[in-house]
Picture 1 (cartoon, rainbow, N blue to C red):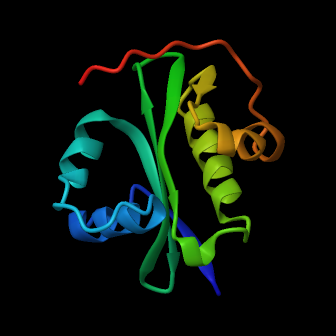
Picture 2: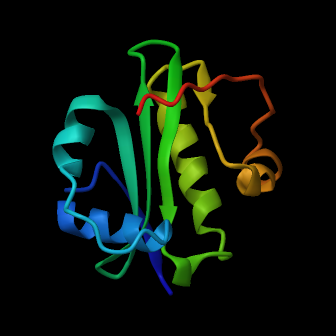
Amino acid sequence: MTVSLVVKFPVDDAELTALHARAFDAGPSPIHPWAERLARHALTWIGAYDDDHLIGFIQVSWDGGAHAFLLDTAVDPASRHSGLGTALVVAATREARNAGCTWLHVDFEPHLRLFYLDRCGFRPTEAGLIRLN
């Protein structure tokens, strides 16, 4: 497998929606307007491609200043445990740093704790959450 990471790749909404469905075991879903959302809200995004197939994705959102946020980290199940997720986080960290951000935040589910803390170098912090719907 030869994987290339592409920053701000031209987003195909159907392709990215399908990757997310596979990565999060969500089953079929309506096509989401990824390209529009990323163009409006993201500092950057990165796709991982095996030849022409999108097998990984991460986006970096931000506050326009010091704080950036990792969102939607997704790796195709067939490509997991290959270092691809770590490579995406490293690339996203570099992009946020190059944009002048001081802090990079990430929220994650408990089963991803070792990935983000041990493999990617994040430190644990206190955070809060409110469910809105």
